Image 1 (cartoon, rainbow, N blue to C red):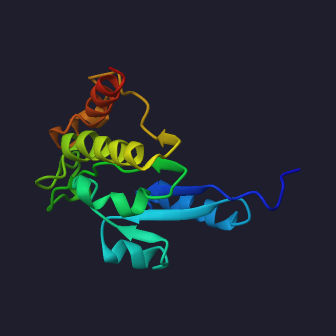
Image 2: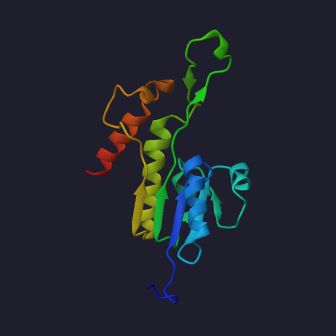
Image 3: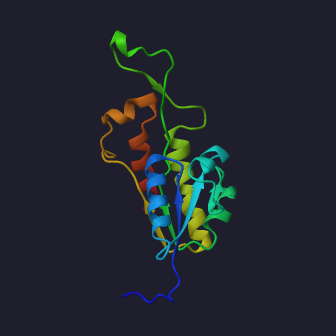
Length: 168
């Protein structure tokens, strides 16, 4: 049985405003006797969506300088950030066919999943974070995976290339 006087590890969940990030952040909050949970979101709107608590930081992961306050004092980082393709307007499912997707300028997988994740890892290392969990997607080694064709962003390829470069 764990010593109740032992300090609880502080865990930062980036992407806490997204589907998976919100689940992980909430699960850690539910276990407040075991963990001190922090969240990182991109906007005030996302912060309010998950409750607007003081333990939720706002920063753009593409801006390395903004990450330091969130990771300072954290013991672990769980990275749940990802580029998100958007459906092109005008798609009518009643007419058949497949929808088309795009990424907003500056929000391609290279900027979010590569540069943004590198920024998070670098900030965590600089702050002395001991554990980093990077949650990715299946199929990262398959350049023909259908997810790579969404918005011509090669999202899984970008993740795999980044992970390979980080291992160097």
